[in-house]
Amino acid sequence: MAKSKKKKRNAKKNYRATKKKYPFRVLNEIIQSTDLRIEASEEVSEYDLKLQSAAKKTVELMVETDNRKLDLSMDSEPILDEALSMKGVALQSKGVEEDQIIKTLTETGASYLLFEQINLLTSFGVVADVYYSKEESENLMIKAHMFMNPNNVFFDPYKALAEVSEKCFVFLDASPAKLGVPDADVDDIVRVLAVNLDAYRDKFRDELLAKL
Image: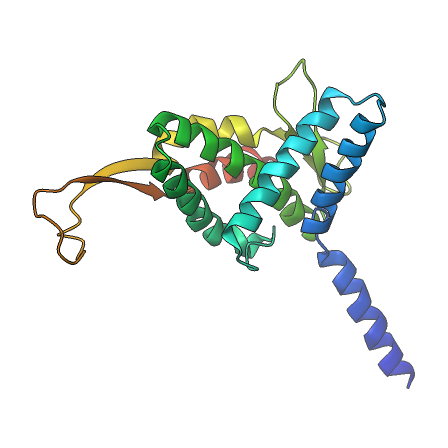
C-alpha cells in the first residue's frame, strides 16, 4: 500500500514538472484580463499590451488551424510550419501582398514560439519567462537561466525569425498542371508558399540553448 502511494506521488510530481507554463487557457486569461483593465480605465503598461498582442496572435492561429496538436508543446513545432503555411495561403487568397504576408507570419510565428519555447524550457527545469525592456528591444523576449545558475540568457524570437524570414517563408512559381491539378492549363503559373522554420530553430539552439 505504501509503495502504491509513493508511485502516485511520483506520478503527480512528474505531471507538475511537465505542465505547460503558458497553455491556451492562460493566454486567454491574459487577453481577457487586459481587456477588462482597459475597460475599467486602469493603467495598462506597454509590456501588458505587447503580451496581450502576442497572446492574441497565438490564440488566433490555434483557433484558425483547429488542430488540437498545435498545443504550445515542443511536439507542436512541425505542425506550426503547416499552420503558418495555411494562414499565408488564406492571406494570399484575400489579395495581401507577399511582403506583408511574410511580415504577418513572422509576427504570428514568433508570438507562438515565445510561449511554446518557454513551455519547452520550463519542462526541462530551466527557469524561463517573458521579458521586456524597451531599452534593449521593442519586442518581448525570453529570459532563461539554469536553476542553480543565476546568469540569464536573453533571446528575442521576433528579431531571430525576422533575420531568417527569407529562408523560412519562401514564395515560388509553380505549375498547377505539373502539380497534378486536373484540367489545369500547362501554361498557368501560380505563386505557392513554402514554410520551414528550421533556420529559426538553429538560431534558438545556438543563441539560447547553447548558452544556458
